[in-house]
Amino acid sequence: MADVETLHDALIDELKDLYNAEKQLTKALPKMAKNATSPELRRALSSHLKETNGQVRRLEKIFRLLDEPAKGKLCDGMQGIIKEGNKMMEEVAEGPVLDACLIAGGQRAEHYEIGAYGTCIAWARQMRHHEVVKLLTQTLNEEKAADKKLSALAESGINAAADFGMQE
Ligand code: FE
Ligand code: ZN
Ligand code: FE
Image 1 (cartoon, protein in one colour):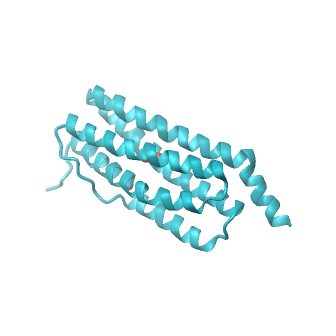
Image 2 (cartoon, rainbow, N blue to C red):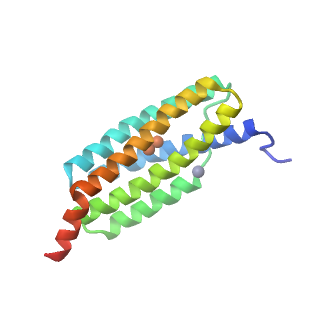
C-alpha cells in the first residue's frame, strides 16, 4: 500500500521534506557565511541563518497544529543543492568571484524553498488549515526577501567586483 493516499498525507510529506531541508540549511549557512568576503553578504547569510532557525521552530508549531510528530524526511533536493555548493566552495578562489558563486548557490536553495512552501500553502488553504497557511506564508515571505536581498547584493556591486577582478 502506498504511504501517501490523501492530499493531507501529501502535505505532511512535503512538510517533513521542508523540515529536513531547513535543518540542512542551518548547517550549510555558517560555512557559506565564513567563505564570504563581502561583509554585507556575510551579514545577509548570517541573518538568514537566524531566520532559518526560526523557520525550523515554525514548522514544529505547524506539526503541532496538525497533530503530527515533528519528524523530517531526507530532502534529496536540498542535499544536492548543498553538495553542489560545497564542491563550488572547494573549486572557486576566495574573493568577489566566490561571493558571486555563493549568491548563486544561496539563490538555488531559496528557490527550492519558495517552490515547496508555495505548494504547501496552496494545499493547506485547499484543506482549510488557515493557521498553517498563515505560518507558512510568514516563512515564504522570509525566503522571498532573502532571495531579493541576494539579487540586490549581486547587482549592486558583487558581480561587478567579480568581473573587474577577472580583468586585472
Ligand atoms: Fe528556509
Ligand atoms: Zn525536497
Ligand atoms: Fe531560506
